[in-house]
Image (cartoon, rainbow, N blue to C red; front, side):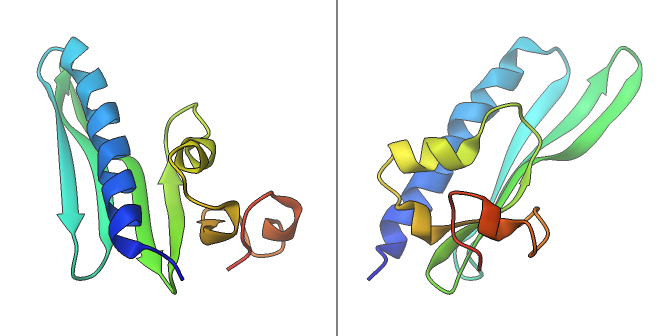
Length: 111
């Protein structure tokens, strides 16, 4: 049985870690959006860099059917591996941004 509270805590910890990286960039704010009722979690950047608007998601996770769905990962790091290091079983992680026909070739759940 999945420990959904642990899954929620791990996702939020990961988002907080990545949000701290934006502090190096002037006039860009990291926003963490948490919807525990719908189990949706997102990190996005908002602000200005070199007179250009910055706005967009960095990471997005959902919890559905007792699994963590990585819906978007705009980083170079494999966040699935990070979740595994935090104690989440690979069979409870779905890389949702991969098409369904690719998922069986990953080390993670297919859906």
